[in-house]
Image 1 (spheres, one colour):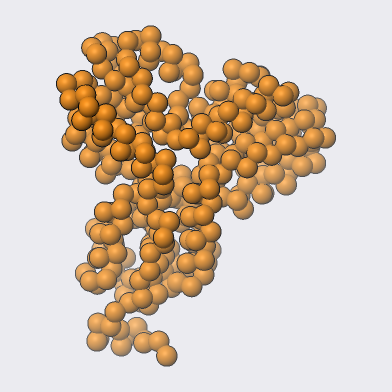
Image 2 (cartoon, helix red, strand yellow; image 1 turned 90 degrees about the vertical axis):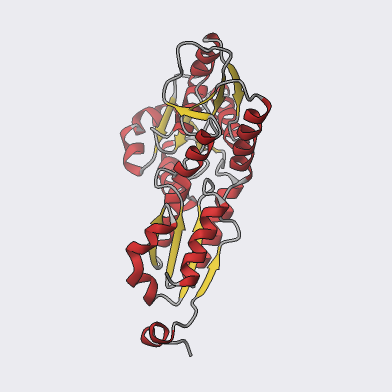
Length: 302
């Protein structure tokens, strides 16, 4: 028999806390962060810039800046023997060319899985399909995918909902051949909803399942944890698409909180005290030390 809330509170009984095995950096993120750090070690006298956040985590961005690797929205006019890193989400071909022409040495740290989506979108465009990208239009990954496909075809759209499909259905229906790629961090359930609406619009529908394996596995594990938890703590940046999707997966099943730092747990003390079975998961851009801080704070009941 499980202990009651009052028993656990009075006797300070330990909670059952488990962490997702897949929580934290995926291989693409780890490679990007490690390579950026090594780049600075190998080039101590060169200025190193990242055009946009390397990954969506403010703590990692701060750590890199402390090492002399600066995240910027616009590059300096004078390259001055500097290096520009292309972030893990990728960049448009036009922008990469501009960076090279400005005199920067370019180091491309685009995630390999994102590169695959870009190439699949290009292939579909070359094969004559109307390219549909399922994802968030303003997300840097999607912007880069679309830009690559648009070099090969005018028939490229981004949709992230059933309503957005309806808005372009006439163009899709008249083309008849539709090819689909997917932002790597999308949830399978959401993608299925959009594809269900695409099916009657196409005479031929070719779907490239480009949700990255790491994202898919993380979502499946998080779903199973949520089914057996009183509370799920999702750790990671609120600007991270894959992290926010983890929270969205859990919310219909159990109480869920999405935090960026361990200190934010203080805002949910009553909720945590009432929970007996707590699961912790984290996005692909969340560093391991941050996950450990959250678990330690939960275990100590601070």
